[in-house]
Amino acid sequence: MKVYIGYDDREQVAYDVCKASILKRASIPVEVIPLMHRPLRNAGLFTRPWKIDALGQYICEVDGRPFSTQFSHSRFLVPELARLTGTEWAVFVDCDFLFLEDIKSLFDLRDPAKAVQVVKHNYRSDGIKMDGCIQQSYNRKLWSSLMLFNVNHKAHDGMTHEQVNEWDGRELHQLKWLTDDQIGGLPEAWNWIPDHTHGKPLAVHYTEGMPFMPGYENTPCASEWVRELAGIHHPSMKL
Image (cartoon, rainbow, N blue to C red; front, side, top):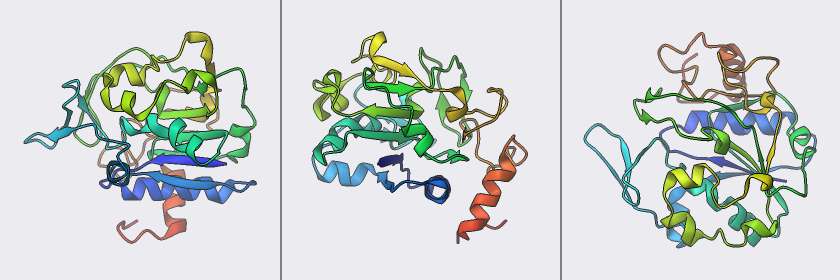
C-alpha cells in the first residue's frame, strides 16, 4: 500500500511524526512517499508557478489565490503518480496528521464504486493559520486533507498533471473533476480535528496549529503528538 504524505520543507518535524505514526502501527507493508514539489517539477509533472510575498505568504500565479503549503496543489497528482507504479489504491494525507490506528483499517474501507473517499467535513475557518498563512473558507474545505484514491477508477482518466497545473486551486480542492456520487465518505474519526470533531480519534488532524507551535501546546491530543515525537528523537526539537 502506498501512502503519500504532503511534504513542506518548513514542516520537516510534522512530516517525520506523521510518517512514524503510520509505520509504527501498520500491520501490512506500507510504502510512505513524501510528496515533494521540487522532484515533481524536475520530472515535468508539476509546473504550477507561485510566488512568495513580503510576509512569506505563498500566492498561486495561476488563480491568484493564497495557499498555505508547498503541497496544496500537488496532492492531486497522486492518482497519476500511483497509476504509473501499478498501484490500485493509494492514500494522500497532509503532514499535520498523527495516526493512532493501524492504517490497514483505513484501506479496509475501500469502496470500488467510488473514485475517492474522504471525510466530508462541514468546516469553515477564515483568518490566519498556525504558521501565519491566510486561511479561506470554501465549499468542501478539508475534504482533500485525507483522500483514499481508487487509482484506476475511470473518473480519474481525465485528471492529468496538465489539469493539476492549470485548474483553479479551489476547484481542485472541491474535487470538481468528480461527480457527487463518485465521492465516497469516511468516518470522521480518520480526520479528527481538535475542538471540532467528537468521539475517539483514529487519526488527528492538527489543522489549526501543531502542538510544537506557541498557543497550541495544550490542544486536544497534543500529548499524543509529543510522545510520538519523543519516540523518534527528532534532532530539531527540544521537548
